[in-house]
Structure formats: structure tokens, C-alpha cells
Amino acid sequence: MAYLASPSATLEIIKKYDFAFQKKFGQNFLIDANIVSSIVEAADITKDDVVLEIGPGIGTMTQYLCESAKQVIAVEIDKMLIPILSETLADYDNVEVINKDVLKLDLEEIANKYNEGKPIKVVANLPYYITTPIVMELLSGKTSIDSITIMVQKEVAERMQANPGTKDYGALSLAVSYYATAKVMLTVAANCFMPRPNVDSSVIKLTAHNESPVDVVDDKEMFKIIRASFNQRRKTLVNGLKNSADLSYSKEEIVDAINAIGKDERIRGEKLSLEEFAMLTNALINNRG
Ligand code: SAM
Image 1 (cartoon, rainbow, N blue to C red):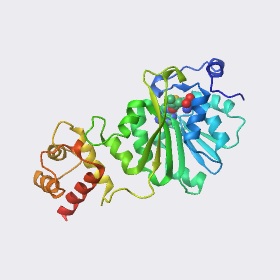
Image 2: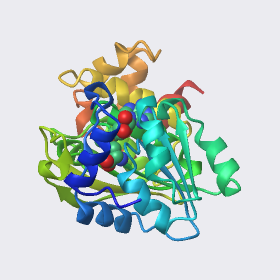
Image 3: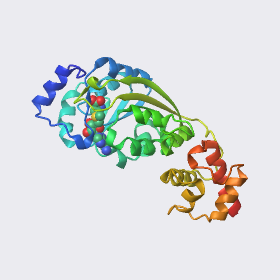
Image 4: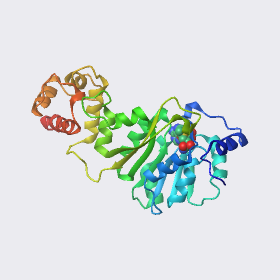
């Protein structure tokens, strides 16, 4: 099978199978061989690696991944693509295609089944309509993941790397910095895809931390606090936490905890760093005893 990473090879397959692009699945296929090899290079894949590819499409990047990795697991939601992938990946015996929604995938089971429980690498040109849920799911399954190299909207890559106090800073920035180190590897123009998306894209690599960068007694509680702080961005931190249905702290407990970490009670959540959210969580939990 010839490589698919060109407009002509992609069109040939699309026509042969009378395939109709599904907007609801975020289908924008890569048609540029240089970009595909740069993504695989950025992911630093070797013959020791088990790779999970989310959304292989017609198998354009999967072909390159199969040549670099020990084993590729490609999870694709669209059943119309499964017969196409059987043809385009027929030359490779180290790939397994799973017809499933990636959000329903058990990452630990994949790591156990294919990599003796050792962390796997994730590589994907992500469907943009569910980037954040997928990234949050992958990050919180941290013990099963070594690194995540993904194409996302340029704005989402900026949110992932944003600093406290900036307009892009939010729960996603904090989740990324808690679990991983983020680095933008390349930016990709819309004409590298078929059909062209309306946005610019970036490839970002998230490398999982070996050790947590902050000490927090309960990280699930910290993320509830973080979400509550950003749900009502215009409100003060006290009001955001007090009004959250997921939390049960009184105004007095919240003010005490904010003061205990040396902050003014009128502060907004968007000003706090990851370390300060960890300290705030510890103060709220410890004050309760
Ligand atoms: N990897 C291919 C490429 O680069 O040419 C396709 C990328 S396209 C942006 C996103 C792919 O993810 C599509 O094939 C789409 O059907 C698939 N997809 C969308 N939602 C999914 C989900 N929840 N689980 C698994 N795959 C999904």
C-alpha cells in the first residue's frame, strides 16, 4: 500500500470507498508527508514503544507510526473507516484497530494488555470538538501514559501553556502543569488538512512528570476547587468556592484558608498558581481536621 500523506492518495481512497467526511467526528485528515513525519519525530517513538493513536482516520499517520513503533493501537469511533483501515494498514502486523469512542477506553487495561503495565505513548491529530475532555482523561490516567504528542487548535495549545493572571489561564493550564511538562513542537497551516479546518493548529507534546510538582493531600479535591474557581471567572475566589455545588465549605472556612496561604480574601481564582491552589486545598482540608 502506498503512503496516504498526499492530497492525491487521500482523494483516491475517499473516492474508492465513497467516504463522506463527518463534521460531527472532527474529521480533517492530514495530507502533508512532512508534517506527518515531524509529528512522529516529535513523539520520539522507538521500536520499544507501544503507541496509542486516537482517531487514525484513513490511517495516514498510522502508517508512519507502525514503521517506528513496536506496536500501535489505533482507536477510531467511525465504523465507516474500519474497512478502509483494513486495506491501508494491510502491510503492517504490529497494529490493532479498535472501533470505539476513546473516552470509553480503559487506558490501564491497554497498558497492561500491550505493554506489561508500562506507560505508553499517545500520538494523535485530535478531533477538535472533544480535545479538552480527551486531554483531561489522558492526563488523569497519568500512570499509564509516558507522553502525549497531539495536534490541537493553536488557541488550545496556548491555554495549555498559559500562566496565572492571563486570559488563557484556566483549569486546562493547571491540569497540564500538574501532570506534565508542555512544549509546542510545531505549528501547522490549515492547507495541510483535507478538508481545511477554519483554525490554525499546533502540535504540543506533554511529557508526564515522574514526581508531582506540588504537595497536595487530595488532588481530586484540588481539581474540584480549581473548576469552581474558574466557573465564575468574574467572581472572587470566595464566591466561586462558596457557590459551587461540588464543594461544601462555608464562607468562613474559605476566608480562613485564603488568609492562611497569605492572600487577600478579595482575590480572584485566576491569580493563583498551581502551588497556591495546592496550598489552599491543604488549608481547607486540614482546617476541617
Ligand atoms: N489521524 C487522522 C489524520 O491525521 O489524518 C485523522 C484525524 S481527524 C482530525 C480525527 C479522527 O478522530 C477522525 O478519524 C475521527 O473519526 C476520529 N474521532 C472523533 N471522535 C473520536 C472519539 N471520540 N474516539 C475515537 N476517535 C474519534
